[in-house]
Image 1: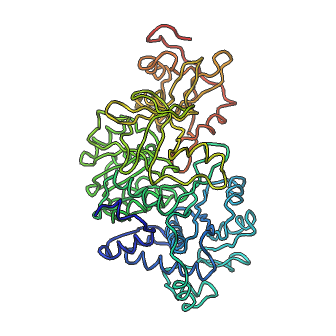
Image 2 (image 1 turned 90 degrees about the vertical axis):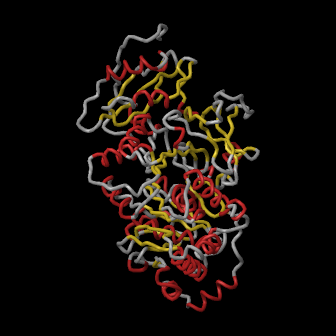
Image 3 (image 1 turned 60 degrees about the vertical axis):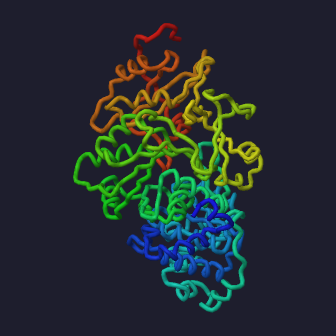
Length: 553
């Protein structure tokens, strides 16, 4: 069956009920629970939990359009996914929140979305009550025992009777509510996903059940998922990667999804891959770098693994080759996307490696990408650099309660991504940099990603980030922030010479900062805004090298 046509008019609950027929005994979800164990649910069991959760939400007067916030770490990601499924049963909107946010950031998010309900762990109850006193608070396993006025989260594992017992409703009340309510609209808002916060304030991206399903269709198709696969990764619940990508990619194609605890180290992650017989693993480039180093120490059986997906940043060629050496039977697929696009986008299949390493490939199934002038929005010729624009049914509706930002980003059916790239003569997209990460050194443009790629060739280097720093005459100058591998000593003179040998003279870093670590968000992406603040009061090291060509300024 053509999956694109299959999704027409479906909601997520309807898709799962359809999958639960032929795949009723197939693993659908493996996730850690507040009960202290990893819950492994088949498609039939997942549909049963979803139905019970929807009934409990209706019984507690959660209705279509209500916002239900999740303040849950990945150690209780099962509860987050089941709550989301219940919301989609009744047409409510789920809003995962960043559990690592400061009080100011969290207060801003809560004020923006004005949730009717917040689901949280017991330890966070008092903090959330202080920041959002008007919201109803549901605690995992706690309720009134934790905080006056709080309710116990209705665990659907207890079935309809258990869900009713956690509220004032009876099982028959739940059954009546189920029959009386209209089916949810697949085109209505279903999830609010906050961007990673590279701007001063994170924005809440609005997706529908339709766009979520098509994100799963696109990403799952790009990765090559089938109903024989188990798909695992280290994705925080509050990003688009769990609900839109991991869960929906798996369920659209009938695969099982394995969600990791945020407390796993690399050794435990490798053991979980073996225990779940994971066939497709997906991660962010930086953590994968450390994971393959752990695997190289020996003692792990990954013969079950057939494919590795990665994204979030360009994977250094040296790391690609390291995976090829240690796991030669595993295909590699590079994925690019963003919350606003689903996170659908582009993919580079393994057969283009190593020839096109660093490229982020072609549009995913059902998607389109093009390069436009970053000022006028007019498409540019093949090979020219400009802003990456995306179109497809996985695109978001816009930003919640932010019409100005919506109008700037969602233009005539295209998402203006803020990423700079180019398309080569084979139709493949090359990521150049974020708009704000292009360094303008005296009118000459330097892509920080290109400089970082050269730096990562040094075997003693653990991490690197290249940023703009103020220059009195040129406006901006190039600074490199580097972290040494454990036990290694960086030779800055050699790093500077490597840059001089492989980059234009104006692109070579003039200022060097050796740091113990780089600031990152929970997905492992380096936060350059925080990095600029970090080095603002530090004195850089300046390295002089013989330039490869004349004209150095």
